[in-house]
Length: 476
Ligand code: TRP
Image (cartoon, rainbow, N blue to C red):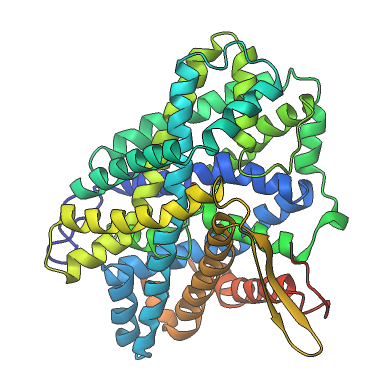
């Protein structure tokens, strides 16, 4: 990073490409390979996938552009960015709450993200050690996974290691090494996914798997599934909590925001769809359940590696690359609060990263225990009125709740507020000036941000708690 048009003391990406790489690094991660497939499986496939893609294009992309725009315009961490933009535009200082809620969401997401990334780390060693070499059947592979998650000490160790890695990188400044990691390792990850896809195409249930993903059956779609699809789009694009805003705050003035965001969203969606097309054929070919939950990748991919030539090597490489993908995402979750502390707290980067990482680490304990000693603690939250009952969620573990509240509530809410602020409260000329798009494209973006995104998010929220059905809701 160099510093010509940045605020004093702040860095700047060296080029538009550096930003694309960083933002793609943030977007592509466990969300694509771990979360997207299992959430798709739980929500019945095709119709969910279609909605997800629509949400990415019609809601996610416009909001992503807005987030980058706000970050670049303010050149500050999300909390101070919202404060200074609100002031510039003559609006209430309460808009800082968008930044604050985003940071809270970031801590919560990082807390479970690190735990799951820990599972990936554990799998690097299981693959390399040849654990799956002769484990050609789904049952043995499933047992390896259950053994791992039922041992809190092991999970704690891996969670700690992953968090230390994240903190160490953020402590040095996110740009160091990031560029290379994303430029070479992401395409390598994509390459192995393509290889896995070729393998998946040889399995007996290939067509069944692809059909599951792409043939929509809207009858299976509940209000909650629609909410999940939107939440998945926000999660996968790293939207709604200020991560992309912080990255945008380091973006040079001359870079085109629209083109950049389209590239990032397209790459992110391609990886998610490809991961699904690999995993579902394996699921159906081995008689596994698509709706088995967060263990889905861990019980399917090892089967593929066990049956592939050079599977141990390719599998080990795959999990290593996935660790890199997870790190380039986790650093973007830690960066907003670290940038805030740096710009307000009179401390150095290392200390700020250490403090924030520790908070997320502690919160992560709840996720660890959700898979073993707290597995039986489940909560339901509903608002009961005399005539109606709104079910917010039902029978969820601690991890399920944190995941649900962040991805499905906090991120879309943050995105909704960002859209309202940028498209209704900021002067149109401010947006035009920052985005520098030609008229037709600008109008399309403005329309999507002003009307389509807020209305979609609002309706999906109301629909999910059953407002339109009047009883019970789709709670699931
Ligand atoms: N998008 C990342 C993934 O798919 C996760 C992530 C990184 C994220 N930063 C974020 C999610 C900010 C929401 C908000 O793995």
